[in-house]
Length: 444
Image (cartoon, rainbow, N blue to C red):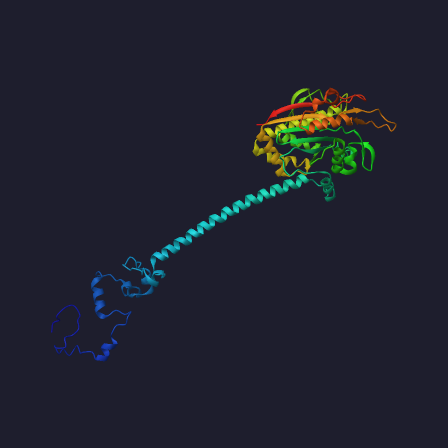
């Protein structure tokens, strides 16, 4: 009997075909497909869909029938028309795509914002720490290596100002510690009382000759420079106060050997040299008279030399000229370079002024523009040599009192008169003060 079709089908129960017996009901139940097993009809449909001669095993794999892997590779539910609940408790569900999307975006934004804030905070803290370290380091160097007792002794004889809105005095002490000379290392080689008026951009320099005869407390008659040997900077400040009759707010001690580097750091100092300097005791450099730009070594010779007819009188005048030149040079520098100068100065200057104090004063003087510098020496004369063979310089205390009244009022000490302020020094009784001068400079 010929077949009805090439397709295999279920036998017709009405045909009575004994070669195709009917399955029992139990067999039919056992052949029912499981959830992951394709039925006979589906297998037939799949065989008809695939091209002839090809086989697609994935059509019969677990992924084709709802496995977890298949779900992961399907499109998002939003793309299939899924609408998350927008009201009620469901609007806060993690299935709400809008909520989930917003949550992820805020998280990334917070991370970026917090990261930028931390970087900025670290930068600010780093700059602040560096600045604090710089200030602390320079202040430590400016304070020098003085002991706690020395620092306290200085505080006991000084009267610091509350601010820089009023004039004040400070003591400038020069120590010329030459190799092989123990005496020079124990005595103050330069002693200058400085009146500073930040409100008028005015400085007055008053030199005290190192050989000035004084009575040092507890030590008897001595030269002024011996006070440093007996009591350091504190004793020098105390004797200057007693001699000149003014309170002193601050002090600065300069090491001339180290001053060389400071002068070189600012590019040299311009000075109008009064006369030829050829002094082997001061150094090997010969300095010609007239306007000169002195480097560090030449500036040291200029400040040291005593090879003059009047000896120390001209030297004190030269030292004031050098200080004046230094102040002018610093004020001519750009503001950005002043901190570097202070850092260099800390290697040769010991002072109770802080970095903030020095910067504040420098800016006040720069802002005012025009700087006036008065310069004079304590009215003095050379005394006759005594029986002890020691040569002294005597201060004319009556004239000094008059001169200090002028200085304290902000006036020019040169107005005291030729005998008291304009002489060149010399013999006993002349009352000379040694090279008083006035200059005006406009800071840039």
